[in-house]
Length: 180
Ligand SMILES: Cc1cc2nc3c(=O)[nH]c(=O)nc-3n(C[C@H](O)[C@H](O)[C@H](O)COP(=O)(O)O)c2cc1C
Image 1 (tube, rainbow, N blue to C red):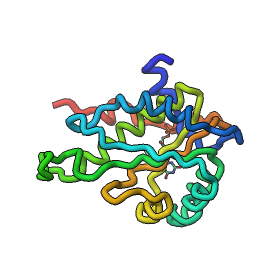
Image 2: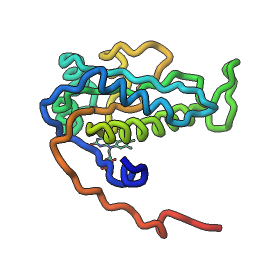
Image 3: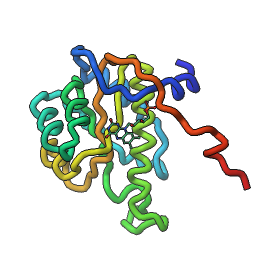
Image 4: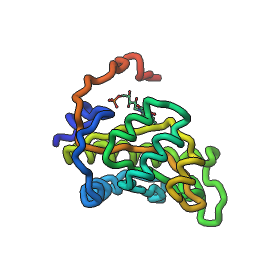
C-alpha cells in the first residue's frame, strides 16, 4: 500500500466480522510497528494480545469507566491489544534521572507513535483497529495482569472490518499551520 494513501485512508474501525484474528497475524503487525521511532530508541512499548474471551469481556465491562460505546467495540472485536510502556525509559537516563523538563511525557508520546504505526500496519494487512483512550488503567492492569513498572498507554481492538466509515472532517492546513 502506498504510504501517503495509507495514512489518509486508514479509518478507525469499530465494527468487526466474527472472523478470528490469530497470534500470527498480530506478530506480523508488531514486526512492522516495532520500527516506529522511540525516544533515544528506548523501545519501551510492549504489546499484550488478548484473545481470551473472558479476559476481553471483563475489560469491556469492568474497565471502560461505564462508557458503553467502548464496551460494545471491545466485545465485538475478536482481539484486543493493550499497548503498554515500560516506566522510566523514555525521557530518562540509565541512572533514573530525567533527561528533559517534560518528565513522563515521552513515554506516552512513544506509545502514540507506535499506535499509529500499529494501526497502519494492521490496515495494510487487511485488518481494522481503533485506538481507545477511555478506560480505567488500574482496572486494566489488574484484569490483564500487567507487571509492575508498566503503564497501559492505549487499548486497540483489532479485527476484520465490518464497516467502511467516512473520514471525520479534518481542519484545513491553513487552520493548523502557523509560519513565523
Ligand atoms: C488517543 C486516542 C484516543 C481515542 N479514544 C477513543 C475511544 O475511547 N473510543 C473511540 O471510539 N474512539 C477513540 N479514538 C478514535 C478517534 O475517535 C478517531 O481517531 C477520530 O475520530 C478520527 O477518526 P479516524 O481515526 O477514522 O480518522 C481515539 C483516538 C486516539 C488517537
